[in-house]
Image 1 (cartoon, helix red, strand yellow):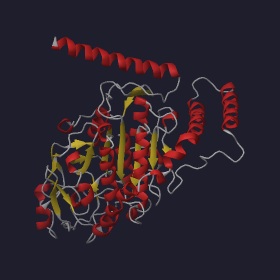
Image 2: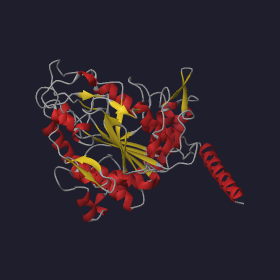
Image 3: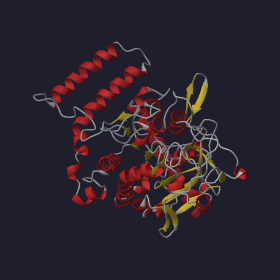
Image 4: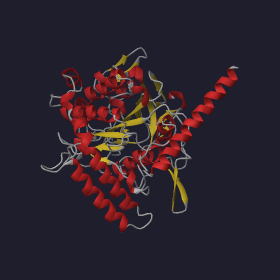
Length: 459
């Protein structure tokens, strides 16, 4: 009887997934919700991109031996590393940060991140991530698209392609750049690549008006705007070639823009939040106001069914990112002060609203920082071993997986490539990395390139 009961559950799940797929196909809307390949733990993803490369050695991966060897040459037994700016005569640079164990899990976190540290029991800290590139642009492409060259679809576009979006009046994939400027990888790292253009991200503007022209012009009614939209749609379709993806994407954008005029203004109005919530995110404090606003808006977008949101910390010239070439202390103290409280607020807010179970939160940059010093106080880029973490969305929190060696040079225990991070994200969304593919120039392409492995300890 028990076996039969479980079998009926499987049949019911399969029927629900099939009906969802049929609804998406019959709607004619490529952004309509689609069934995952298997039962999903998460419905949406928030990628907290720390652009420039936060130092694992000064945040989540304490190295007492590195501190002991401060000022000395790297011992030969640790091997070699390729850097951009570290000189041949460089010496090891110990961390000036202090680490403390937090939560019931007793995970070590540095004093740069005291607020986020309060959430470690919900976080799986992966200390053994590695990538292939040590320059920003190529590493950023690999972080977002799985490839080191531009022209391939980003994580957000793949997820929109695979699952659609549950929101009819908001974009399914949103990027919130840092107001201080662009990054080395530029727009291509967020883009659709060869996927249909309808899966492109919506780039929000910095400041109090992330999207311009949301209000109807004075004297223009909703019905009048709808007539104009129908006229444009009719003219475009009359001249549209079959399979014209660019024009189809433009029509979809017109439809979305019209729908956003009804719902988006309310989503962007943070004044509806309680003073306690605003304070929790650091809104009103000059250090945290910008990032806090963007993370609070992220939570509001997730509530409305947006599939993938990427609020970026860091932009513009190197030191305005987590790119601490000259002075690791000055850079990381400043960048952590901007993000620590808002990140903790987001995790706590999602959890208290019951959204963390269905929202996968990922934190990290394109690489870490070098154990050797650049100059006397800085750290160079480092791709051989660094830290990322995941929380929510079915992730088993309160644990550390993987490890770098005793000076933080190489990932030596359970090393995980960036493609394994991608595979794990897809797994939590119920997406099979092989089935989520697109035929491009005669080859079935996928996010994980040659194929990744799920980080089994954390799911």
